[in-house]
Image: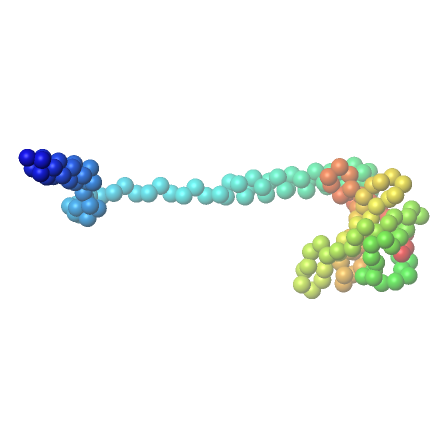
Length: 168
């Protein structure tokens, strides 16, 4: 009797196991030829985010232009500074001194801001030891005399400043 009881239990366990496992995928979808599935939802596009960023950049550029106008009291800033160079501008390095309108600044770095293939937009980082302010001297390598611009860091923006004389 013990053997018959064990075989009945095994058969019952096997039947339960079969019930819990369900159908195979092939059996489940075997007769779905007439079924029409709904269309998938279209993807959300990220254009809004890019447009928002572009708007923020435009707003910031307008703010910079306004600050420049206020700073320079409506005067047009031109690149008519007289340049006295003791060496080529490309030879300026960290630790060198540059005199702008009779005020001496120390060079912190000289690097390429943007490489435009034919020319490079360069920046010379300057600082004033007395006031502990940061400045930038920017220029293009193919037209140094006409493209030389001087900027002062105010808060988080560089504001263009008028210069009359520069020497290094």
